[in-house]
Amino acid sequence: MAKPARRRCKNGECREWFHPAFANQWWCSPECGTKIALERRSKEREKAEKAAEKKLRREEQKQKDKLKIRKLALKPRSYW
Image 1 (cartoon, one colour):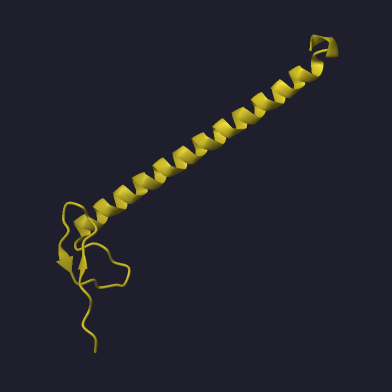
Image 2: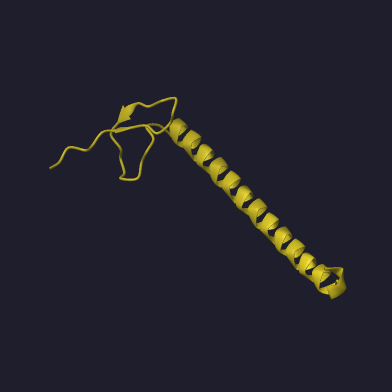
């Protein structure tokens, strides 16, 4: 039977060596687990906000481009 692999805690302040009980466990204690989860959730929230802001800017730019095209269509040829 293979010996369970040791891992380091992914919490930046802790970094303790531990033997994980599960394959997807990155934390040594419940306190570290909650801290990692909160950090991950805040990163995901910031990423989603950034994506929404980018989408909004893209939509505004499309509207500006449409308006610019319509304005140019109204100008007579003698304008140039």
